[in-house]
Image (cartoon, rainbow, N blue to C red; front, side, top):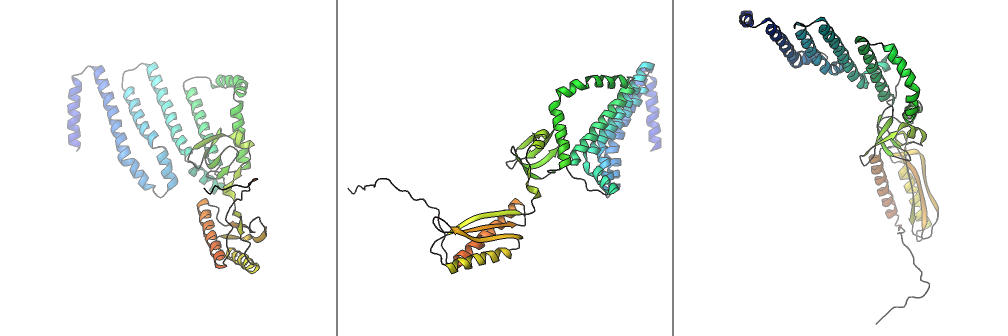
Length: 366
């Protein structure tokens, strides 16, 4: 293997001897760049996969590696470009420019990796839970993550500006002078930011909660500094400004401890007292022993005399609050009520309407 390499090196040295010095440097610089491109492929195909397999059981380290995967690949390419350009006969000014450009690219790649890492909120907040032994609401995840991402970008920009020799103090002073004008122009945006803070402090809802407001109803998908994204039940995505949500009444259906069922049922006047009492007792007993009915509040009563029959009042709750499961429980209860009523031989009162004519209607018998 080494003998073959030495042979190729000898042939390359002979080939370069026929070239002018400038072309020799350009050719060697190009070879250096190709070598680093090859190293990048080796890193992607072998080294990175080997690192992932080593830390397969350590999920946090694995996520960190995935966050820096693309920046590390580009870092190898930038290093190759830097060494390749460094081999060329450049003057001092150009070398200084290349050096600053290379350091700036390193800062950008590190910022990129940290941005990706902060986008994966599970790593950061899992560490905070374990360290401080606190329960952090999911609503804070996206807001705090975006705050860290913006902070990381601003720090990186500050370092890059200083790297290129600019005075950061003058830039900050300029921002201070224009701060009032920006604040006046961005009143609505600031209102949305403060609305987001109110949502965090009050915690009327969290991610994946089912909420209803006067303007929208659906599942909370995302919360950021400006707005909250809600997926409606017809799969439309509605973006609501945080300032609007902070001022509206929000009903959080996901926080229900139980789900209400309430209705009236009419039965015919021909029903006897014994039939009516047995029917009410049987239905009440059925609900009290039903595994999916909440035992705290169950009202089944003979409520009164209606226009066309006796009225039974039903008021109780299901244990489940999930919409699909609630419908299944409600259907099962309805079937059991029908079975009890039919067993007692009771007739329902069908919805009907009587129409009275002011003048008699004459039939034409011809």
